[in-house]
Image 1 (cartoon, rainbow, N blue to C red):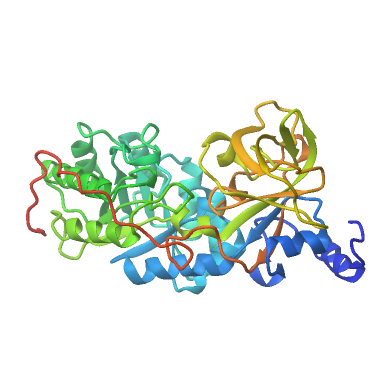
Image 2 (cartoon, rainbow, N blue to C red; image 1 turned 30 degrees about the horizontal axis):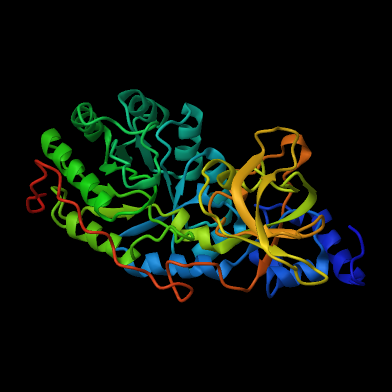
Amino acid sequence: MDDVCGLRGRLNELKARTNAGLGSTTNRGVRELLTFHTPLDLVRERLPELPVACVRPERVSIAATWFRDNFPGDVLYAVKANPSLWALDAVYATGLRWFDVASENEIKLIASRYSDAKMAFMHPVKSRKAIERAYFEHGVRVFSLDCEAELEKIVAATQRADDLTLVVRLAVSNSDAVYALSNKFGVSETSAPALLQKARRFADNLGVSFHVGSQCMNPSAFRDAMDLASGLIREAGVIVDVVDVGGGFPSAYPSMTPPDLELYVKVIKEVFEQMPVAMNAKLWCEPGRAMVAESTSILARVELVKDGALHINDGSYGNLFDAAHCKWPFPVKAHRADRAFEGGEQTFKLYGPTCDSLDAMEGPFTLPADIREGDYIEFGMLGAYGVAMQTRFNGFGETENITVQDQPWTSMYGPVEKRVAAPARRPARKGSRRLKVVS
């Protein structure tokens, strides 16, 4: 790496760390990260050549602490949202011990780092060998499913174990989510009762789960899903030991202002107390985005300005998949090392570094009109599904992790932005009359 601004000693230290295997985005702990006060300080001091994940571990700690203290049940961090060790360590440090894992590699990651962690294998489709190794080598006892074929696979791979927690995932509406997740997984209303009955025969503990969709903007979505689950439990006539309300808890992206998280918890708690489940049934949730979104911004360098577009060194095959394909209002900010920007602003289209024409972000992104090669663009609110989505396509994708100490653009946890009231509650579903809890 070039010697920049006379900081030869510090850069040599960084090289040594990288050569020692500490430069990977997802394989570095908090103590190993360099720290700057702000991303602009980082730009001025280092002029980074690679994309940088500007990480704020304390924002993960704040979010995890909020869920720990406010959710009336067990909190399972969804590892897929951000598997970086600094993020996992921040979650673990708050006392949370449950992790929602979606693959064998995530299981190995958690098992190798936290000896007292509890894991739930919540991907509804798993290979037989992955189930077998999860159970016999890593002590996993919780498995999700949404069809009889997967149930039979779990039973066979665990050699008909008698200590399984089997969680049946239900298909529910995603109409209140910004990003729907209802097409791929979830047993239908018509098939759910029979599946619940069959799973009950093999389960030491039987659970139901669902996902209301990513970035759910209305707490009543959880009410509707839980009411649906209650009806299916009654129809099946089974005892349910676990209710897992999944993820979907929102983050505060600019111009996308969800209700207070307290209102989501209030709805979930109220409905759970009326569900026809065992008296000692457990309540779970699986926050991912809400736990880590505020923690990270991505710093990318402008490599070329051409025809009203900016070519940058990060893109849809790197840390900016959501910025390219979800087209959410991720905030952007320009940084220049040597002097201030001059003049007004204009909108730009952005291109990532690969040779694929799909590696583009239409935006439009409003940035200084005089932005030029060597300047930097910071993309905020990318702690969830930023570094987790990166690839090495065309040889690009390497990213540095560096800690910064400034505040995120917006926050669900304060004090960055004041939250607003929830939208009016929708009427409950027809036929969702609630009864007292039964054992």
